[in-house]
Image (cartoon, rainbow, N blue to C red; front, side, top):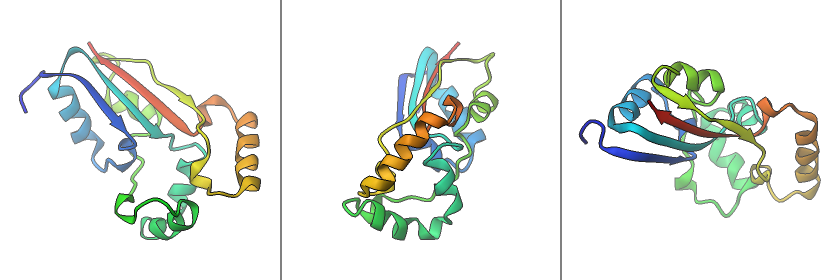
Length: 145
């Protein structure tokens, strides 16, 4: 793909799988037109999805998700890296001199915690007690200058 040819990049649940954020951010910057946007939804490294996911080794993710989300196809479970999933990571790899940042956090319904109503309610209660920077999801909006 050529340089500066893309107006908008939409990324849904992929930043947590990026193993080389230096390369990925450089490629996104290269193909994005000035004024173009990167729009991404990804788990926050320090949120209620990111922390438990990082505590469980990748080789066990399929087994854990089989219990938590039995309807999810195994082929849709990929290794996670969490190298592009904090405000600091985004600022480092998409410098403010090159990108305008409008990223925020939010809590989603805790689907990763399975069908247990008790666990679901505990997670929802924890959302009220944690600061916004620890919310489960990052909604990333970066505009190339």
